[in-house]
Image (cartoon, rainbow, N blue to C red):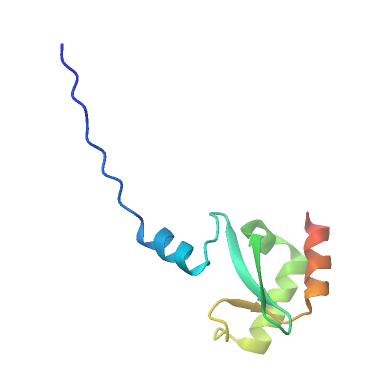
Length: 91
């Protein structure tokens, strides 16, 4: 009885290679948002999208930016302190 040894070839994923080279890697189940005057990047759980208080921020974002966000990602129109306060209550 013989065993056949499979040769594994490790090929880099395009998305993970590109993401890590530019520092934009976001884990599965999370999304990046930009907040505040300095447009600081936060990585948040996707589950926040179901929270009524976070949905209010999304509505404000839609009113201010529509679907054309200046950073290319989701931009939240509030201060960093407000955002941190809100997300700390969701945890």
